[in-house]
Amino acid sequence: MRPVIKVCFIMTEILKANNVSKTFETKNGGRIHAVDSVSLSVPKNDFICIVGPSGCGKSTFLKIAAGLEPASSGSILFRELEIKRPDPDIGMVFQEYSLFPWLQVIDNVAAGPEFSGVKKNERLKIAERYLDMVGLLEFAHAFPNELSGGMRQRVAIARAFANDPEILLMDEPFGSLDAHTRILLQKELLRIWETHRKTILFVTHSVDEAVYLADRVVIMSARPGRIKEILDVDIDRPRSRANPLFGRLADNILQQLEQEIKGAGWGRAKLATRNKMK
Image 1: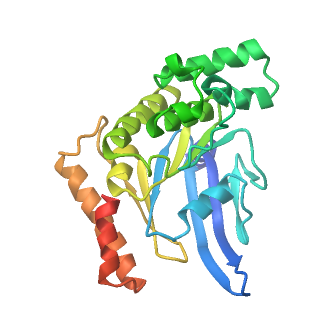
Image 2 (image 1 turned 180 degrees about the vertical axis):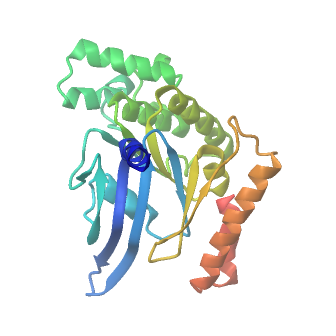
């Protein structure tokens, strides 16, 4: 029985970080130890959120997973192969909208399939399908500067899904949005994820957002970033923020982050960032 269980586990694991560390050299010859010995297994189809104090290496870890930044030591494996460069099966959505301003919305969404050699008619059909999914088909021929911030981020999400990646890495994609738009896009993202069941690794400063979205929440320590704890979010979807379980889990995470902030010597004034995390 044991060998069978082991094989099933390996089959479902799509991304694995093995003792990943990252050190940056500064211009004055100094060194910044950003990430330290991070190991994480990501099962296929999971939605995982990473939270931690500012500067703890969350985004750096995500860039290593995307093949945009090399690890100083350790490795991240995708389907058992080390990630050393960007892979079309690993998509990424940044906090900045990162759309091509000279292209219409539909051509922005179709850009990935175009780079992959998909013929024009087919890639436009793909783009239309995902624009319809995020409710922006009527804006297909608008330019990015004609859209609101929330609409541009929806275009960025549609573009990421149009590439049909196996994994979607998201680096604070809703961080610059107002509270109402942010909640709407959280619901939209969950709807798309439940339809397509992609694997998502999502970095956020918002504990509320992490508990609302994730199957598991990874809590990172202050720099150098290490994994402090991984918590299962055992709350049925759709989740209500009024659920006492929701509140208790969010408070647990906030307390752990506050301990990290205090331990890093940021001082009492810096604890005001706790309100932003909510």
